[in-house]
Length: 88
Image: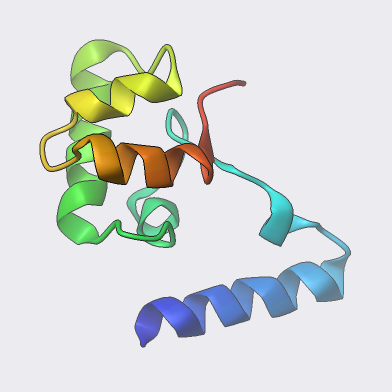
């Protein structure tokens, strides 16, 4: 429920400010835990694991590397690939 509220708030804010946030992908190398939790299938634990992995390994070189994060398997990685980026 909180996730839906946050997405609604961000979408409304984006529309009000003219920013196209809803269409943007979330960068695994720069996203906060809160931003990561907006991804489908990512809760607080997985978001923390993503951040822990990127800090320990100097960031993600490719989206495929997300399968190395504890708690993310092939199925979830494929789902995330459509929602994330690692580019600057």
